[in-house]
Length: 224
Image (cartoon, rainbow, N blue to C red):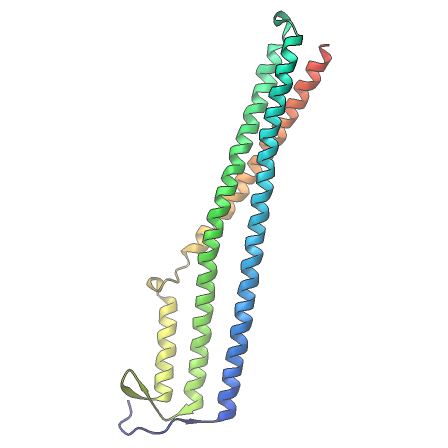
């Protein structure tokens, strides 16, 4: 703290260059974060849309196979109805298709959770980067300005004040209580792993169900 207030002075060219760079960086950072935000959400939207189609395919296939089976049963005497085809092929195929449907629903649900985690993580990254950049600019100002600055009704040397503000920003970024903990990163990785696991499971069970239905259809046609 200075006893005798001194006028705040500095090189106007240096100050203008610092402010211009700060403004340019802020715009670039916001644009870059916005691009990442839109790209990630578009990717998750495509994942959800894809599994919505899988869900409709699974449910539609079950409905069509039930309709076909109910139209087929009256044409075959009950004594010669191939029950083994229903037990070993058709019923397991329906179960697999239902499992695929539930897996697709799970993927869509985890996509919503992943989007929420993405929002938290992007906010953390933007805030952390902004605070770090602000701290860098404050340290530059501490070397570009001389004189006394009044802050919270107290007079400080410009270099001391800006250095102190830069240190405060760095501490706030590093403290978990400041809202910048990286727990969202781990949760995002976990959600991505769940999406991949349930997504593969939905595809595999759908394919197996369709294969079993195709085999059962061929066997039933050969009975005529």
